[in-house]
Every structure is written in C-alpha cells, then in structure tokens.
Length: 467
Image 1 (tube, rainbow, N blue to C red):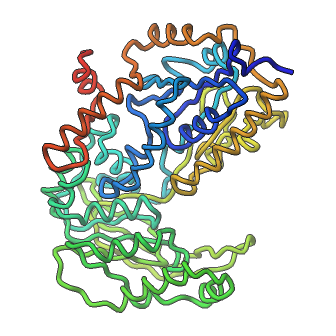
Image 2 (image 1 turned 90 degrees about the vertical axis):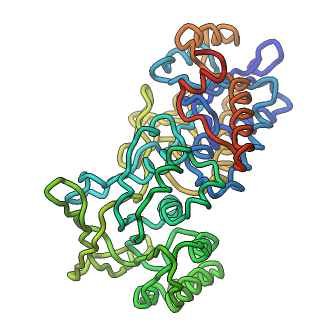
Image 3 (image 1 turned 90 degrees about the horizontal axis):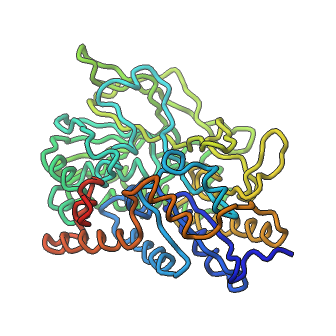
C-alpha cells in the first residue's frame, strides 16, 4: 500500500498544457477527498486556457465563459501555473520525472492536416488555424499578414473552424469592434475588400459537421447573404436512407435548414457567403507572381465505406472557382512529444484509457498519461474534454492505488520552483495572469468591449513591471 497521497507525502502531478483538457484533468484530481494532491500546470504560452483564448471565435463570447470553471480550479491552494515555460526546451521530460509522481500531457493537436494538392503552398494559401490564432492575438502569430485586399475567398472544410473563419470574414467592422478580437486584426479586417466567401465541403448536407445553431447564425449575418445551391442541397439516395434509418431529429432539422436557405431569396447584402457541398479541391492555380487565382474543384458522389459511413468519391466532373485567397481547414494533428512514443498516422500518443503505451512492448509507461486531442485525436467540442479527462484521471488514480508511480528524487514543491526560475526566469504565475486579465478587461471596458488583449510577451512583461 503506497503512502503517496498523504499530507506528509502528497501526490505530485505535472500537467503539460493549460487548455480545457488540462484544466478538466486538474479539476478532477483536486476533487479527491481521500488523497492529498498537488498539481503544477505548465504551458509554453504565458496565458492559460489554450484554445478557449486563442481558438474560440471572438464573436462567441458565451463559449468563453467556461474559463470560470477553470478559474475555480486555479484558485485551489494545491494548484500552481507555470506559463511561458516550454516543456522540451526550458524543462525536459527527465526533469519532470525527477520532481513528480505522474505527468499528464494535454497538448492538443497543434498542426493542420494538408490538402496534398498542387499549388497548396502558393501565396495567399494559408492554414485556417493560423488565421484564427492571428485574429485571436496569439503571440506566435501576431506578426502574420493576410492579403485582405482581394474580393473572393475560399475556406476549404466544413467544420467549426471553417465556419468561424467564414463568419469572421463576413462580419462588419462595427460588429467585430464589440468583441475581443486583436486590435491589429480589427484594423486589418476593417480595411478588408472581401465581397464573396465560399465554404467548400467534400460531402453532402447530411454529413456537414457544423451545428444547427452555426448554420442559423450564418443565415442571420447582417452583412452577408447566405447562398446554398439548390441542386447541392438535395440529398442523394444514400443520404436519404441514412436520414431515415438514423432517426436523428437534429440531423433532419439541419438538412431542413440547409434546404430552406437553398430556396431563400438573396437580400442584396454587401457580401455573399456560399456553402458548396460535394466538391473537393484538386489544385490551386496561381499567377506569375505566385499567388492563388483559382481553385480547381471536382464533383464528388457518395459511397458506403466498409465501416458503414458515407465517403466522397471523385467523379469526372470539374469546375474552376475564381478565388484569390484560400484558408485550409481539413483537420488537425498532434505533434510528437520528446521522450514519448507517437503514432504518426493518427497524430496521437498511443495510449489505453489515457495511459501512455509503448508500441513495442504494449506495456504502459509508468507515470505517463495523456488527455484531450493528443490522446484521442481532434474530435469533439470543449465539453468533450471533460469525460475524456475523467477517464485519464481514473487511470491515474488506479495506478496510485497500485503503487505504479514514478519515484521522483526531488518531489518537494520548492525544488521545482527553483528549477523553473533557473531555467526560465520570465515565467508567468497564475497571479501574473490574474493581473493581466484585470488589465485587459479594464482596457476593454473603456471601449465597450469584453477585453483588449495583450498579444506579445514583451508587452505582458512590461505591464507587469518586469521588463
């Protein structure tokens, strides 16, 4: 029977990543009444909350209210935050093993999947997540530039991120000015000349990943007409059967909403937003200067795959869509973590119920765990991370009970603090974040906005009086 988890020998846990997956894991760990648990959370960025801060669209402020739950977690006495600390650069995995009984990685899926088509790397062709991070004030992406002087834009993909990008491009400056969008992005989008936005989806209306609320919101944009081609809104035979057999009321409603827009009238708004179904890009074409000028599309038909799902299959029908700017949003993948195995084909760390598994021995790596997208792949919404984290924490607690733990030589909290100060003196504590939060909200209040973000680490340090 292990003595770890007592007042004299608390269970010391490091969580790498401060997004929803990391905070939900911390929440469940710190709820344990029969164990004394101490959690240290590390993040490469100076501010917490991950994609809630840098991924959720600025015009969706209600979704960001989930941070109130995370704030309660961070207020607990046995929680510490080390921001602006890169695990792998400032602190290595072997360092964490010397200080913690368990280590949980909640680092998300940090890169975009590629289209793998000719012309993908032309000028004015970008991963959508870079644009999202840019307008949300991510320090790594604040200096990017996007040519918004063009008139026609294509967003490839039909999931949440693609919908967000299209919606932001169609918002009027006065709408964006009421959000927490980064100031430089607000300025650039206010000067945008974009008039037509196309969302390109490879499957049909019944397979669209967006929610009913999201498609409704697109149809209610004050400054953009939503256009759906009637012939693409109609379901093929397989999709009709799927709808009937599935008896999914929500899906049936989604199809009805899409078809309603297909039969609607244009109102002559300043911009148009067209959703295309059953087409895939096969090539981006460019001009002499190397910039995108059009997208070659192939018409798809659906067929039933071995797992029963409906998959797109290219036909011999092609068309060219004139666009000068492309945002690619066709999926995301995790990146390898130094010292851990990685399943490259899936972009995840191999695991069973959150326990990291050695692919050669099939044995669990003692003290190593994953949660969130690096565990299961890029699926679900923010709330999906809660049961996912609970599953991982359950495995962690089982291993505590069985004594399957790392044996850290320096488990005392002070030794970790000394290490961080030595390796990265410009780290950010949670108290630092609370001060920055207060300042951002105060700056926003004077402008009638939720907050005005700090978007560079130097700027943050300066306002904390540490520059």
